Length: 72
Image (spheres, helix red, strand yellow):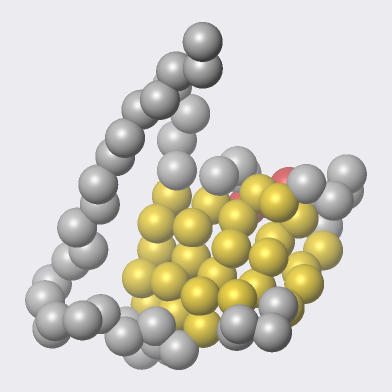
């Protein structure tokens, strides 16, 4: 099973999600929606960072919902 890393920086107000190893990052691209896309050398998105992230409620963690879908 692939791993997804979710990192919430409460001080910097960012939420970062990695779909692959961060060490494979080669280029970053900021979108107009204040989202930074991290890409590998083949320009495939391997993660993203949401800028100015503030959780809806103050809590000591992030709830993560998982859904597995198999293509038929």
